[in-house]
Length: 65
Image (cartoon, rainbow, N blue to C red; front, side, top):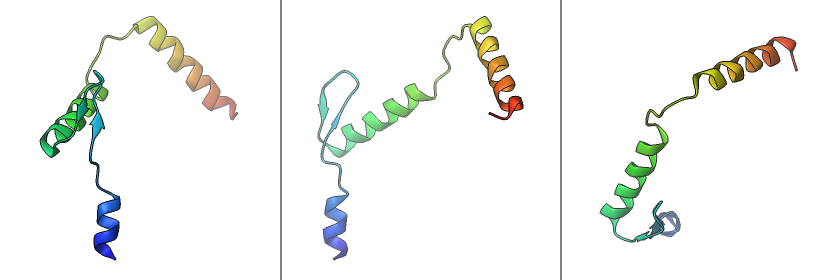
C-alpha cells in the first residue's frame, strides 16, 4: 500500500519558466531551485506606490473591515 502511495506522489516532469520540460531528477530539482530563487529574490520597488499601499493596508486593518 505504501509503494502505491509513493508512486502517486512522484513528479515525473516539470515545465520550466522558459517553457521547456524537465524530466530528470536533477533538472526537476534545478527547476524548483530556480522558481524559489526568483520568487524570493530582491527586486526594485516603486517606493511611493509601496508607501501608498502600506498606508491603505494599515487604514483597512484599523477600520476593522
